[in-house]
Image 1 (cartoon, rainbow, N blue to C red):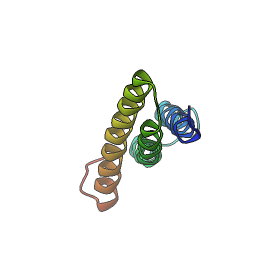
Image 2: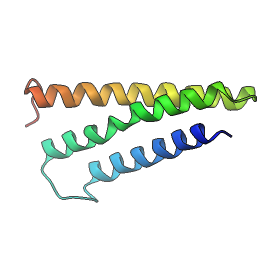
Image 3: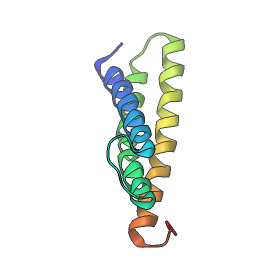
Image 4: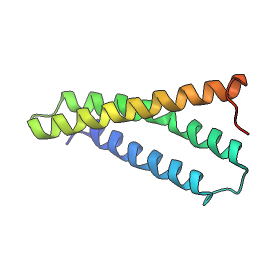
Length: 98
């Protein structure tokens, strides 16, 4: 496994863990809208994870590993884009958070 792919997997797992912990209120005790905002702000890191997984998937020789890395990259990209849209809408005041 390449270093890029391993870093992509590690960042993906760490980001998902942080998003879950923020959503459940385990890290900081905040109200609902700010938890939503911070959770999605952390979710933007999934875009970096998607890039790293995509770069690492290109260098894989095994078809199974390449497919798995591509699927993780796609999932990370979708979560990252969704989080970026949510953060943008909340920051602009267009989303009703209360």
